[in-house]
Image (cartoon, rainbow, N blue to C red; front, side, top):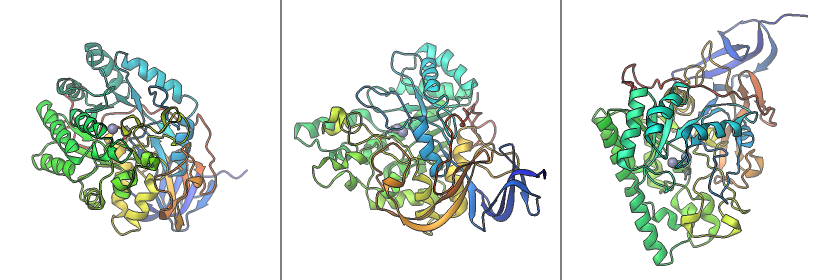
Length: 477
Ligand code: URP
Ligand code: ZN
Ligand code: ZN
């Protein structure tokens, strides 16, 4: 029996990292990158990349899978279907949310979420926490212990009745992030303004899906972003403002950066590829599929987001995959009924399309370098959430989570996707690339035509401290 140098050897790769593009072979042993170079030996399995671009597998640091919700709402994707879809779209690590229910323990939410994930995931995964009830027990015991166990980030909501915190509670939670070196993610929208606007719309019969966007104008995001920045400044801790949609929040973040404040930001495909018109031009229910918060804005704001991606304003590009079917009884039509926009579950599907949309319109559309693409989709999310350099890197010792890209034009169809959602908001869009191969720890999980995952192969990732900032500035006491 011939013995091989590697389990897998990828020949003739055009390796793209967050800093460089260079030609080399990649030798993989025991699921990790063992060597980079030329004339490396042989592999038990060999793949000829034939000069195609190879990037780190995507790290989708904001997605919702099988998150418990008040009935009848139910997420269409669980860990099995969600991670299958992610892998087919070139994502090899996901970080969904273990959400605390008000009045209940955060630890119980984590235990329940492990039960949902165990034996299901095809790719590696971590958990963010959602803190919705910061009792003394949560602040002083549960949260510090969970951070030390590798749940090193949590989301704070400024809106949604069942999740939102007031400013005093936000300060308390941010203080825990500072003391224990965790990353605080903030959903910035002003809840009272949204409620006031929603009631006015309801009073005048404006309840179709499209009015969701009018009930959440940019100023409600701007005000909350500014407040979140001020609260983080008071506590002296970094924050990361998630799913930023347009100019007004962007201006606040630019201002904060100008002041030297440690404010990071995330945006998502829906703010580059959709507008409020996708929620409907008339009162039809079709637009329910694009109801998400903050809502998509307009073409001019799409340009603001593109600029922010390129000039460093945004640190990470995530999907915010929140999978709800339109048909059926547990998604966008609760109990099968067309409801007022207030009752439409928020969020849209995008875990599989995130990478290819940005590669196609960004890299191949001449809007973004390959380095920026890798930084936003893999390297920075891994750094922000304590996974780098194990994830988000092509380096010796890193997990062999890789994407070999196929550059070809095709029309995106939901029928070709692998999630459990009956539609994609991007149906009919022409894309210019798709992952030809996705490797998860050295295993081919997607070969460009078929999925080869195995439920339970994905490992839970105990995460470390964020590494976006120099040591000592990440928020530890
Ligand atoms: O509308 C959205 N974004 N739904 C998902 C939940 C969240 O706030 O991220
Ligand atoms: Zn959110
Ligand atoms: Zn979300």
